[in-house]
Length: 366
Ligand SMILES: Nc1ncnc2c1ncn2[C@@H]1O[C@H](COP(=O)(O)OP(=O)(O)OP(=O)(O)O)[C@@H](O)[C@H]1O
Image (cartoon, rainbow, N blue to C red; front, side, top):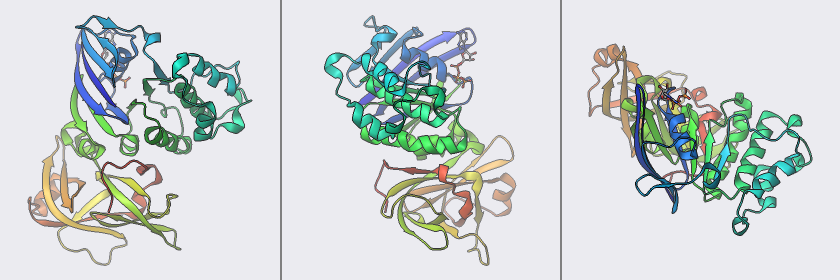
């Protein structure tokens, strides 16, 4: 299962020129305002006919301008999940779900309503109208409706942007299940580095209409050219070792042991941990008498200077990479040089639940 996208389109003063290919799972389109995400999404949805393009989800050709193929939007078999849910207010949840199913061709109605209802935990909501649902519940129903249309591709356009942090935390696990349990490619638009780290199988970072980087969350979020020094983060693979009585969870990573405030994942689970570069400080010598529990030792693998006073220093720790955002002045004052040993210090409380992704992890955790 792959997603192949080639789109070129010019507006006055803006040119979109992107090409990427992504494996099964969630492909996150990530970029600042004006980078071209909506234009690309419109081309995928069939709302914009690009000057040149080829968009194929697995073997399903949505658009091929050279072969003069251009499926009408309603024939593209795309399941949409928008920011605001867009459920029909006069229909019950059950009827909203049935409406999605109505769009599925008869021979493609394999997605079983009962399974979708169970996966999304919306059984108790079936007889309610959308007006009586919370924002998070509405989004779960919207996911169900999209799935039941037997889509060839799911397009999720900033689906969490309108939700507060608590609702986001409620919905993200359902997107993780969608990624891991349903074999439909998902194109997911987001501004949020935390969502990228948790959900993405592949990240396509857009900048001024072009692909600035394409790869795993760890590769793209650590790429200064794509996200800048200020936006840089690391994504480590980890295994939950133990939940301790003092409220901390212990993780094993190839970079060393990490401690963080208790999370709900079970012992043995493999997870992803996003660590914002600005939460990491560096020390040449082994720090002593510090309150921080997370002190990792590695070799300086890269130093990138930003446009402003910042710099990104990346340490190699085992086969993992951990980046710290420091000042250029500190790089000089500390005499940081590629190849030398350095210690990274991460505050335990800097590792927040929204930075922890459950389920699919690109490579095995230790
Ligand atoms: N119909 C149009 N005519 C002319 N220019 C357009 C049109 N649609 C978009 N643009 C321009 O194309 C560029 C990319 O816009 P687009 O909406 O795709 O960005 P975006 O990454 O989705 O931004 P946001 O996150 O703010 O939605 C912008 O400079 C915008 O002004």
